Image (cartoon, rainbow, N blue to C red; front, side):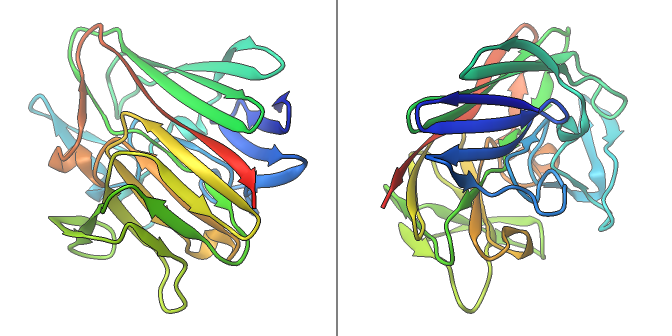
Length: 272
């Protein structure tokens, strides 16, 4: 486990999965640790090379079909980078940089990714930089999965109305959108597991802290406060693309040969 700290901020990162296990502000958890050890049930996992689900786990690229490992529901979810052992390239008291090559049978593209994680007085930052070292383009739809600790209530504030992705079934988008609220929060009648099309800062307000989330090259975000939020957090997940983008192409990033492309997020935290 790698610990980095600066001022009021501290973070712990595991080289397995480049997983952020814990972030604290003034000695208090602000990112909810996982309760069961599952990478996407707490902390913050890198969702690489794709975030959320791919229907049936299959996709086509340049006329060839590829298959990702499937979950119990018959789909593939949240990529595989969270299962790999990452290489620690650089480490300082307040930052760490880890690297990984993504090429495998399911994703036969020579793509390197470097993730730089750092903390400041009241800020946490995580930036992934992708480099295509191959001779063909590669599909990408990355995301991150931070669980913001909020206490029993949470509220989200946006600069403008987002577009809520309408679903064709439990998991997958229909391709249609509807305007949603600039301000919404925890509900007594339903839980969130929803995708929104939106670019800009996001403010998250809980019982004890407020967070301002900023993103780099993120056109969508998920909001999740279901079972794994433990009733005391909300996952606000920046994503490059729409759910199932490897199949639909909606928002998908095509990484060209020799292209270098950044994607990430940061947040500042303040006490109420």
